[in-house]
Image 1 (cartoon, rainbow, N blue to C red):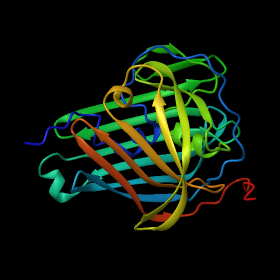
Image 2 (image 1 turned 135 degrees about the vertical axis):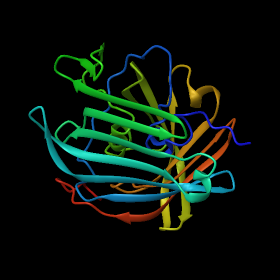
Image 3 (image 1 turned 90 degrees about the vertical axis):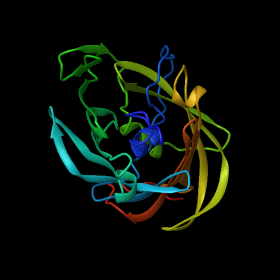
Image 4 (image 1 turned 30 degrees about the vertical axis):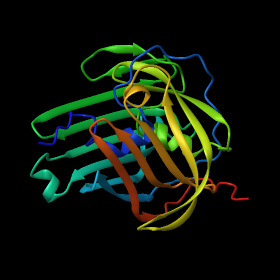
Length: 265
């Protein structure tokens, strides 16, 4: 019988991309890197197939639905959905949704919403990030200190896409999840050509690492393949964990309209 722990494997796309599932340990002191112009914009849509071992598990969608105003700040309204297919749902039904509002000027997270529906497991989390007061406010009334510039598990991925990544370099991004703040270390290992349903791409090979105890530090390794250009489109995600292997591959892509065109030189 297949065993899947709620909140870990099925919420694949945003959590795997950010590498922040159920991390624990002290935050590290590091200044976040300075992003370039955002290489994404309203209308961008990415559709991924999700494989759990040799099994086709379902589909995930990342989409920038448009712009919204949150507490006086103009933000990208970004949404992620992960749905198991009919076969996988017979074992473990997944209907997960994550929303992030990312400030268009700073690329910081302003708002985060997560709704998990995985088998009989249900969980909803809602967080407002006040960078001026350096506080994360949860919908249940609890507050936690954060550094200004913190990311959530979905916005961290878009933030990394905006960085000028170089092979052999490491980058540190402050991120907040599960009432704690951590540094996410991003290592750029090299380049590789990748073929998926959406096409063939020259990619940067990137590994996110949690500085502290967590899923990917002790239980598995995550590898991201981002297009080696100004847009850094996620083409493939691979990971191995104790309960099996997970592959996420791009099958459809629709470009958005960046508010500022990134330098493509």
